[in-house]
Image (cartoon, rainbow, N blue to C red):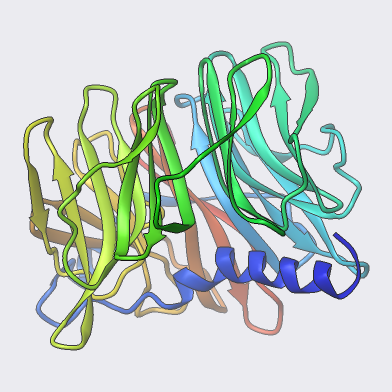
Length: 366
């Protein structure tokens, strides 16, 4: 990318990452809100080495209690620079050993593939996948063609996908361990907003089509419309796939002109739709917690504390993170299960300064 086009595309990427969470609304008054006396049920603050603010957090993934990675980018005098943090079970540290760490660009989704860590990397406008071996050695897998927009990425043993756009339109790129192919999308698909996979022959994506939002599924042969009965006039924020076949679609629709969050769960046979009292919460950071319930960060009504929702069917309860003196906006951006704990990673804005990185934990060892 270069010139004005590069500026426009980077702004599109930034809005895609930063935009949705800012639209999150507080749950209505009817929600089952944890009373103030129990405002911090185990959430604790984890120190994180500061970056160059303001920062944007992209993703967070854990492989158990002793390893997690958080990605994003920081703003420098020149433009933006990739940002990578590692959790070793005791503390967060900044990692700057990967290729392109000192160059302009950003880091997107992070995935564990076998014993490796894979991360989508925009390196000075060129797309690649960073791979970290079990020995801690980094390598880079370049994408087969340049994309104007790198919308999303997912990887599993034996396959990886990157979805985005170039000057000819939508692109679905698949890596099979030896090379890349460009996969055709079903007719009528205009834009693929996100992608995730359970295995090399079972991937899901959500897309804008000529008939509205749809869920697509790769069955090892082709991408097809999964025929998920989404609510009318709805969109999809995320799809959470679980090893035993369960899938959860999170999104929002409009009821009587008011946006509302919905969660649809597939048990292998039927879809069930729940509408927990979450208002218009963006569900991108949805995870299955160690307690079996769904968890996600929501907009807080307290500037000095984060807020999280625990969802069990149509019921939601809420808890607050630790109090942060002089904070005016504490915003978890990503959430993951780390063994018996939940880890979050996001930003905290202290009065008089720009948002910087923060992390919190629920459960696990103190």
